[in-house]
Length: 634
Image 1 (cartoon, rainbow, N blue to C red):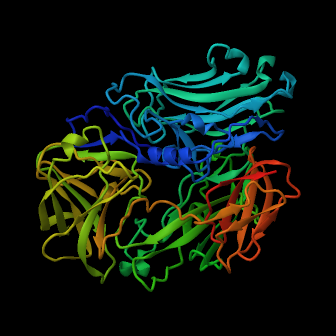
Image 2: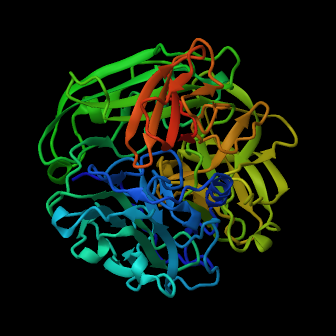
Image 3: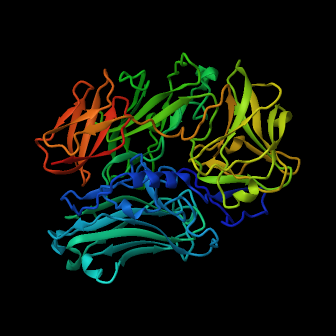
């Protein structure tokens, strides 16, 4: 099987980075996304009523945009420290996993002084209360899930574990009592074991079949940061199953979609040229079935708010995809290495827009509805960006006078003035010391003889790192303060350290640009041994606040009234001239209503609905979604 290259971190510790190597990676010791998402959850009503287990079961594949688990299945009032994401797992079942580590619900270490070799209870993900009183052992109720240790993170130690526990009301006479029914102790994957494993757990005694049954996952890890990683996927709770009922029977994308640009996720609009476009894009398509599936892959390019595609790639029809477990990802070139024969049209106002690229999978060319759809937002702002805007680890150099240079290549015939450099410094435990560590902001030209950094064309003394822990992935802007720095072709940005401390710049796993990361601690330039891209961006023109630019656009100002509703409810905040689709789901996750809407016809009848609580999601023609809203029908 072919897999994306795994990163191995050797000798990483939480309290201090090893000083024997010039360059080093460090685990996250603060994750602002956790705190922000937890705050949003606390502002929303929490529904804690008991959930009936439907005949088709509950399934959570973690394929949604939220970083917090789905409240239709999980009790978020307990504020778990888990993290739904698309970047930490290797060879996931689909696009999205739930990750357990050593960071608490606010994104802070459970114990910042803990040794990396210690182990303590950390994240806990607890299900809603389920009413199983209508079932018996004969109904063959199974709880299954897929799990992986390490992925692209850090392998758990032998004393660490992932556990599945259950609880029923009868055990809670003097406090909650949970019983472990499955566990996996510290698991250190080897080079041939990079895929997920399935766990099938049968509820095999009548004591479980009561009103109020719950289950939960929890992990033991070092509590000093984002390490000792476990990932779970495809949690499936259903009656009338067998031990061999492990198939998902579908095809999925498993990693975020690539940029249609060469190397970059973002380029300045005024620098854009047709040569900026990639010739091909790599996608990873996985067949989770045991039989070969006929799969159609396509993608379309849109301007936001315009339902008519600017371009459609339909060359990926009728590809026979063998099962992943025997053949790995699709190697059919029109699927796995699709050509890019489209060039964007520059915006009339440079540097201020984005394109929406929608990637779709269908089983067979005659199927109308895609089985998997993943968007990508191609941005044209005023900075080059290799990174996707999210840091998985911190990258640092050791040594007084150490040099870090990051290569950028501009299109031919483009010349512009560099106005600033934006960097995201990773929040770490020793911020109090590092904020005083100065570096020299530096720009180099290109040395064609060595194909690396050349002479210094700009240097600014007195810069210090800013560790902005209040906003996820907030870039700090370092303005070019004197002179005119005009660049073209190949140039390098970075710094020269005044002290020996590692400053820890954010590093993104998703886009491997290690051949563009140069370091020099001994008079010789070397390229990095670590796969990833640094969160450092050259800016041309007026700097933007790039906080959260990796976030997918979201429909704004969408509201529902009256709520609770008797006979109907109305959706406000829709734009005229655009068609929308309303999806209404019950708390089991089952879609009970789908309806096309416009701004002039945004009323939904509740006459066919039973009284209860539902979740409403609105999607426009480009695929942009609203936040899920609770709707009560009386």
